[in-house]
Length: 165
Image 1 (cartoon, rainbow, N blue to C red):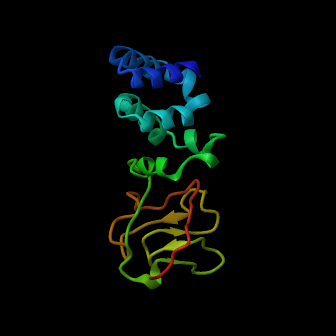
Image 2: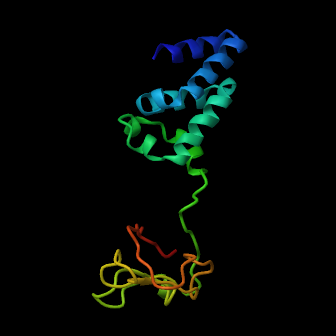
Image 3: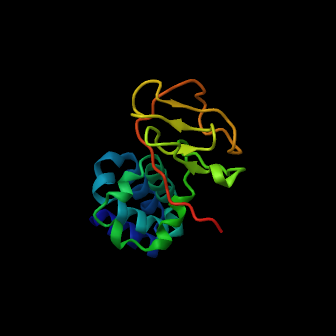
């Protein structure tokens, strides 16, 4: 993408008006280039201090839609240091909480239940994506897992392996 090469040259030659123009152009035409060149643009934007406006815009787009970077064909070749700013994205839908009783962190009552968090904090019964198949009540986790207290359904979930240290 030639515009990125011009952006790098403008930075090296300290052509701030051109640098700002290119950043604004890329930000304003986001939909056209974002899916095709997200990794290349992100790598350049994060590498040059003068591209902070572009870096913020790309990082915001990635935070709003992480699939942009994780489904990119270049993802497996990205330097891990470039992933660190992404880890600081606000996780609006994620729930992270400490459990007060480690025995109740994740358990399975019997085969009619899915993974359960805490003694009452989040229970999934049977087919958890059916109405009224799940329930929640603050008990063993330090923060409330969900705002829904009555029975509800869950469309999908992820559980990560937990190591006791």
